[in-house]
Amino acid sequence: MMGAGGSESRTGIRKPCPPALSRTGNALCPPLPLDLTAWISLQWSWAMCSGKLQTGLLVAGYFVYLLVGAAVFQALERTAEKQQKMAAAQMKEAFLQNFPHLTVAEMEQFMKNLTEAIQNGVYPVGNESQTENSNWDFSNSFFFAGTVVSTIGYGTLRPKTAGGQIFCVFFALFGIPLNIVFLHRVGKMLSLLCKKLGKFLYEKGMRKKKIKFLTLLFFLVTGILVFLCLPSLFFQITEGWSYSEGIYFAFITLSTIGFGDYVVGKQPGRIYFSYYRTLVAIWILFGLAWIALLFNLLTKVLEDTEKIIVKDLHQIVKPKLLP
Image (cartoon, rainbow, N blue to C red):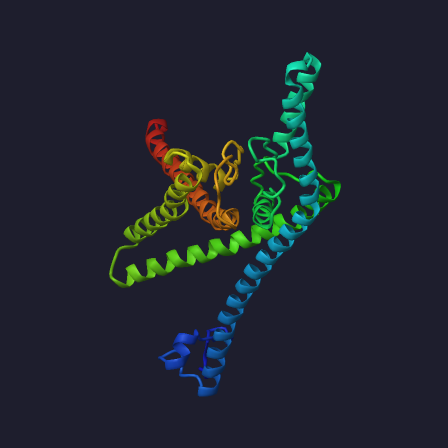
């Protein structure tokens, strides 16, 4: 027996027809009633809208979380940083006044204080110790929040107050899982883009192996251009680095190695535009999704290569073991 919108197997259990077949009908599946077809289309549209809504809410919630974190870090750390800068300026002034009369112990203490100031992000060079230029303005705080949830951790900027350190623990505790979910969603979007490209090439009559190679090549070339080559040129102009240093910084950052030997917006004497580090933080967040997919693809390629090598070795060794 055949029912509308489905087919019945030999066991008598009716199987639902795929929506594509049930709309037009065929020998196995008669056409569905118009109202049922409309209901299926409505459900499909609702699922698509729901997915887009989830993505939109995730992206909005993720950036709101970073913005709130940046505001809290700024409020907790900026006053303490001003005090450190004033102390560094006073230390420098006292050193210049008493330089001819300093003892060895006083010189050692000065070097210790100077090293501590630099480690805290205070550079008493020229006018750098003035309190107008803060390491904890909103742009730098947003950059710091991004490095926390992405686990890069350069180490050149860190909270010094007890409140800032405790908040950083809880901010990372919830922010790192949120960052993983965000990167997973962005990765799915990038994968979907590659699948659409593969479908387009398949409809043009291209073979599957060639499609796989071309989509992988497109993914690699586009990602290298957008997340490595162009940003490195931008860093070369803005930071005064060489192009190779820009490439090095970009990869070390996106791979979350984060040595801290190169950090944006920290060159003494250079003037940066407002929210420079905020833009860099956004580049990092999307670049992390790309490089995570790249590492997954490379891992899969290595695993497939290993299987092929093992299979070839079995084929070589097996005849020799036979009597």
